[in-house]
Amino acid sequence: MIAQVSPFWLVKSLPEMSKDEWEQLCDGCGKCCLQKLEDEDTGDLYYTDIACQYLDQHSCRCKSYESRLEKVESCISLSLQRLDEFSWLPSSCAYRLLLEGKSLPEWHPLVSGESDAVHKANCSVRNKVISENDVPETEWEDHIIEGVINL
Ligand code: SF4
Ligand code: SF4
Image 1 (cartoon, rainbow, N blue to C red):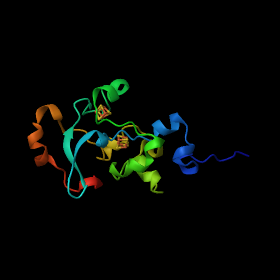
Image 2 (image 1 turned 180 degrees about the horizontal axis):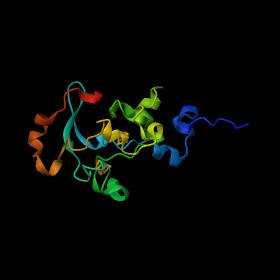
Image 3 (image 1 turned 90 degrees about the horizontal axis):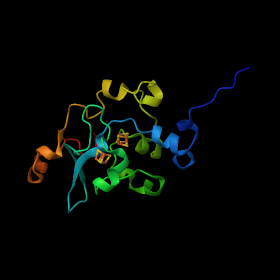
Image 4 (image 1 turned 180 degrees about the vertical axis):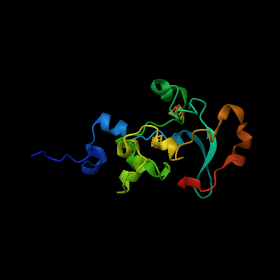
């Protein structure tokens, strides 16, 4: 008789996951590396199609992952200590989905078994963004993405 083992993300809460499991949750969409603007009056957060200069726009991975926190002041390391801040993450982000008790989408690498599935499903920022180096900050407002946080 062979015992069925449930996938870790179905049986463990975020705080129960190992470091490796935690890292595997990232689907590589690259959305959290887009520049965001906050409305000073309402606190609403708006995503733009402007990417951090260190984002590889094809792989949608950070080109400077190990030193990212020293290089980019606004770069955030997602961690259990910051769970209460995850509301700024895009609605498709696995960390946010699990925190809200939702399921991972079928294209998530852990579900599909394909690391490229996020791109095939058109759920990453691949070929959709421009580098912050190419847009003056005074023009960022013109690059706000419709749909605000739900991208
Ligand atoms: S938004 Fe979430 S899933 Fe996408 S790259 Fe960022 S941490 Fe990973
Ligand atoms: S430095 Fe931070 S925000 Fe910039 S690409 Fe790397 S992980 Fe993303």
